[in-house]
Image 1 (cartoon, rainbow over the protein chains, first blue to last red):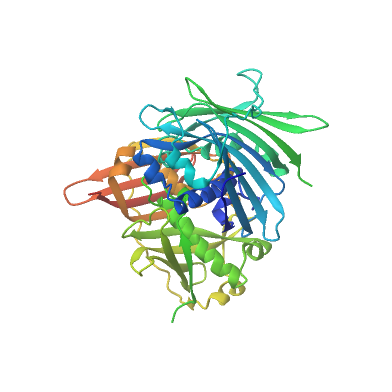
Image 2: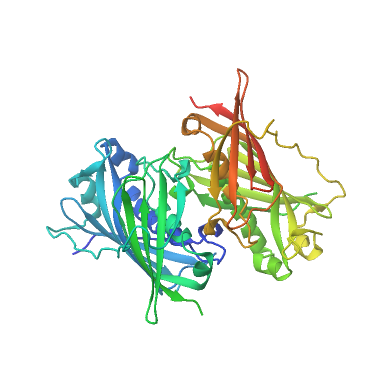
Length: 250
Length: 250
């Protein structure tokens, strides 16, 4: 048993790519989230309706696998399915396929409902989940944790002040902007010469307008593998952690 | 006489909007530039071809008028025309219309060809302009200059470090990122309560990866009008200036 599938075509726009002419990982996630929003709108579970109940959908984790990052002007198919849910968590899968059906990327994401006033996780309301025909399960998925930095001095850092346009309808930084903070903390030479293959990103604390965040990134490279470990901190809190696996470009 | 017109539909994506659910001005310009890129690709004047000649299209000025900013999920029509050119400058017009033909925004832009090695303006090559059937004219347009700040201390500032994803195929900050720097330097209360009606933005110097820019913004409000004046500076150079006209939201 599983939820309703939804798919849509998307043509990669130049402003979804960087100077390598490939989609940035933040935009890859945007393109997938777009499909889930379009499905939600089609099923009548609009952002407006959710907000009207004093709630908002919030991401707590993404597990991303990338076989080949889509390129500028490429036509892709985005498929999504709200697979299952329990009292507090909804699990959703995404796939991006090329025009000839080759799988380019997939993502497994955890959604929760946030009470907009209390800023706390709320129970999943039946009226907000039933339209997707997801499977109800008592099981809470035990997803792998992103690797952690061994100390607060490991790696290199850059600071970012939250911008007005980083804020979404939940009045906090949209989950997608963390990707730019994390990637940009890596040296440009690394970004130009490597391709992201896997990313595990976990959100712990909201970041708000006016906050300054420190993005710390550590490159862990040996004969077998190339990994990076990331964290985003405000002055008070560790807000987000991630670990990535990379391949050297040919 | 005038150039070939090109038009395309575009559905506003959630990540082209901010928390007001309206398109950001930077994304409005992206959506228009997308139409000109699509026209160029259709006519065989691809970025690749231009780059192969050691050149790149660069913007030196945009004059923007906005009647109503498009909203999330809205379907719009984007129309563009490479109207005329002289030895060094190409003039292009853009229009954004609603589904029922109402004009939402228009833009008049000045393009030049930049020599990628010398980082200097190059003569317009016939093979790169002829496909558009633009009108050749000896006349150089005298467009209004954006208003200037009266001193380097006027207004309020924010600093931004150029990110890897700000850089485009010309190896400098894409013209669109200046909009976010300029708007974000205004208080959030101002952005939430006003709508941008006109913007005149002029680019003077390139900004590169690794640069830090200072975005300075001054609000000039009286009974008759609400204006803002903007500048973007690196340590060495005044890189970009702009002036805007706003209306209070109802």
